[in-house]
Image (cartoon, rainbow, N blue to C red; front, side):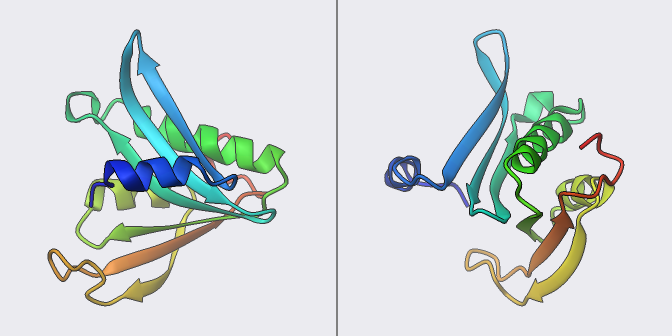
Length: 129
């Protein structure tokens, strides 16, 4: 579900919030936003513009965020994804994330389940991180 301008403004005011982007020239093609504590990274959003999907931009953006987290000493990353978002689930699983929980009917707009995925950052899982 898209964030409102107000939600974005408030997030950027939080010291535990960070966002990273991948640009091609002046054009933003992918981004990731996260909250972090001293030991955990929560991935809030990962997006790639439709015309740039299936080109590795999501993977590169995710790997970069995990690498920064590892350098910060953060041990674990977590995220939640719609059960029907198969491309995202495939990406997360290929990057070493493991499903740990299901949130039944989590999304109010569709009633779709939310899946919780976790990955240890300190151990490399084939992502180059």
